[in-house]
Image (cartoon, rainbow, N blue to C red):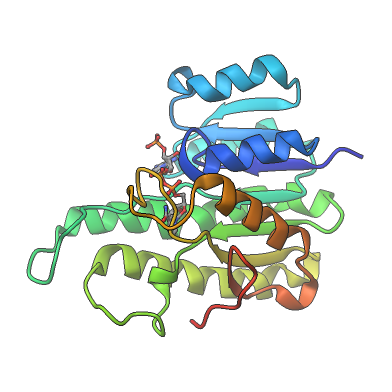
Length: 231
Ligand code: NDP
């Protein structure tokens, strides 16, 4: 049976490449983005793939999240990738913290992933062997923090990792695996031009890791090569 992916932040960067690679593998994909009318690459892909559906979704609009979940009520979702993310002000250092931006980043990176999991749990439980993947970041790892700074982004992804850990335990009785994945340092708008890998290498690695997830991996934090990352 055809597998179904729902992914957020699908119009550019890592999200867009994941969409391309899962479509190429024969999956049905529901690609969510804030402005489908401007998502030219996704629209082009729809010409080639009947199995691609676009949905308008700002992940911080929780009414819209629930509405989308209602609209897709009969569809089992095998894989939900919470990819949408926001870095906040780049280059901000100690003494320079924009509190409103911090709230915005937490909203996108931490709160929305939980609200999405809550809304789509019924769809995940309709599928056999479903997984919920949160695209996190090594920058949320305490152990990996050797350079300080980046208070806003680091704290939002560290908090996301905490959400993932609790979710993995709460969703275990439903047979849904939950993991946090680090995509590598990727050349995107967020990662910048100096990133170590492109979106194709990142997405291919993430896909491989996801395909091999077992129940014992649930609640874990891994990079795109499958290496375990310390919290
Ligand atoms: P990009 O900046 O290229 O893309 C971010 C995506 O998130 C866009 O599609 C953007 O949509 C979407 N987004 C942001 N805010 C919202 C929102 N409120 N509602 C819906 N969508 C939203 O980033 P990447 O592709 O690099 O990052 C993807 C994920 O990977 C993120 O979670 C990021 O934190 C993580 N990551 C990236 C790394 C890297 O090196 N690139 C390293 C570690 C983690 P729009 O176009 O509308 O703004």
